[in-house]
Every structure is written in structure tokens, then in C-alpha cells.
Length: 203
Picture 1 (cartoon, one colour):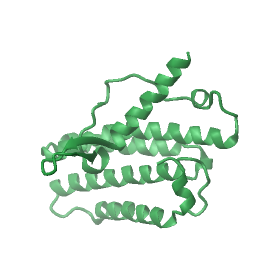
Picture 2 (cartoon, rainbow, N blue to C red; picture 1 turned 90 degrees about the vertical axis):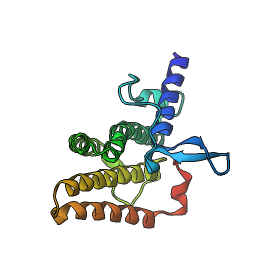
Picture 3 (cartoon, rainbow, N blue to C red; picture 1 turned 45 degrees about the vertical axis):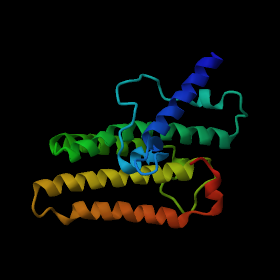
Picture 4 (spheres, one colour; picture 1 turned 180 degrees about the horizontal axis):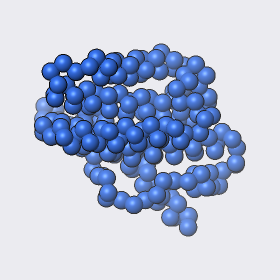
């Protein structure tokens, strides 16, 4: 049972790294390994949707062997939320390739679904996380990372939606571009709210 829970935890660590963080590629200029970020640069992840069936980690698994403190439970809840958001990101990343290939019809359908998924995810978060309350951020480990991750996914969806509508209409309604601007402003507000203590959590 111990080995099973360890593999369970490791799997989600691998998936988070694959979707959010980096892979290494040879640089043509320096012939050295350089980091390429899947989310930032749109490089395809190794693990695709539908190629695994590992369930989300549970509070029981993440708190096993640890004191049942409120802080530890909330940190586990924050990590579970990140895992769920990672799955949503995994469905959004392929939209970048559809757009680049000119297949906007596929992108439009997935944007609508992912937008609903993101809203549902946000509505289901524990209220104590206060995801958009930057002024009273709790000391829950990983909360700041979860906040910027959510804002980044929201901004990505807004940009893809803007690209889709602007490719179909010569003069799209300003609300589409306003959504992109609003999403970017939220990221700026978040960054301005950070304090040194926020960087001590999980990023």
C-alpha cells in the first residue's frame, strides 16, 4: 500500500512537470541542453489526455503520516486543486497547435468547453483559499503558485478566444479584446501583491 501511494503521488508530480514546467532540448547554437517551457512556449507535453487513468490524489493520501493540522490539510487541498487545474491545462495546450495549423474550428469548440471547466473548477474551490483575494493571502503552501497558474490559464483562454473571433470577423466586438486586457491586468495585480514570504511556498 505504501508503494502504491508513493507511485500515486509521483505520477501527479510528473504530470505537473510535464504540463507546466519544462523539458530539455539541444540548443543548435551552443549544443547544450536548454530548458523549454511547455506552457510558456507551447511545446507539446509528453503525456497526452486519455493516456492515463490515475485518479486525483486525496486528502487521505497527501496527509498520511503527517499531523492532521489545518495548515497541512489546506496545503493538500491546494495541491489537489493544482492537479485538477493541470488536467484543464492539458486540454488547452493542444489548442495552440490547432491555431498554428489554421484549424480554428477545433479550437473554438475546445475553448468553450475549457472555459466551462475552468469556471466549474473555480466554483468548487474551498472558500478559505480566497484565490482572488491578493490583499489577504493566507500562508497556505502553494497558494500563490495556484493563483498565478489560474490567472495564466484564464489569460491563455482569453487570447485563444480573441484569436478565434478575430480570424472570423473583420471587426470583432471590443469585449473580446477587453477580456484579454482584463486577464493581463489581473496578472499584474497579483505580481504587485507578492511579498518575500510568498516565495517560501511551493512554486
